[in-house]
Length: 354
Image: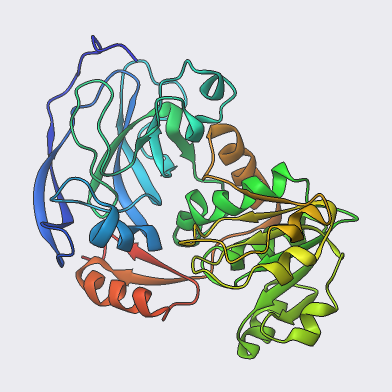
């Protein structure tokens, strides 16, 4: 993007909830949201999903404080720039984990902007490519973004349940699509949480035979209700041994390290396990990969191509996240619950509840 792009409006005072320092509690904080430009969409934030990465940003990953989290945004358009063609005031729209990229590298040209050579601009704690200003996230009352990274809220989808689709949803949909989960394939989903519960819904709707792996026998009925055909207790050696050479694809959503070798043995020849959880390390015997020409892979969130495809798929199959809607005033207790895993399966902030 050109550094000569000019703002067409003045910056707007915005109220958000921010960690003023690393590890700090979130408190109300007023800041200037950058000015509207000709290709921009301005919106009042209606809902903002609470992602586990928000916790990481507040306590570990954040680079710039005060930090306003939030990258699963549903809003209502208040104003558009003069060059915007896809949106108008009153439209319900969505924003995900990135709001800009270089637009010219091979990955961006393939609409895989999340893999931008220059790294994409994140929805919060990133730097605007035009003026260098710091991006502030969706735990706020107002947001501005280039229309290229804004998506229409699919008609008929619950807006609160749709918010997590822009992170948890597309992060699981994209690898399932890439590795061609569908009719005739056996797909494993490891972990039944914020990511995993959506992965089960997607894989089932794609036509795959879906097997959920869990360490908790109490989650069996939940997994079946979400759409799994079978549930395997991954801590049971006998049940795991019965899975050998069975799976075309396994999507692992677990963020902690655990003995991965039995899961690798469950893959067929040339099959793939995609790890989304970014564990500290892989507890794996590499020979397990060589014995079946198997692959251990990973995946980022998604670019605009996969995001649009996911939203169309969700509208077609009426898929949204299972959410608990909360008020922004309760955000610190909500984050404490999230840290303990006390959520089924995603928190979403109703920004209108105060």
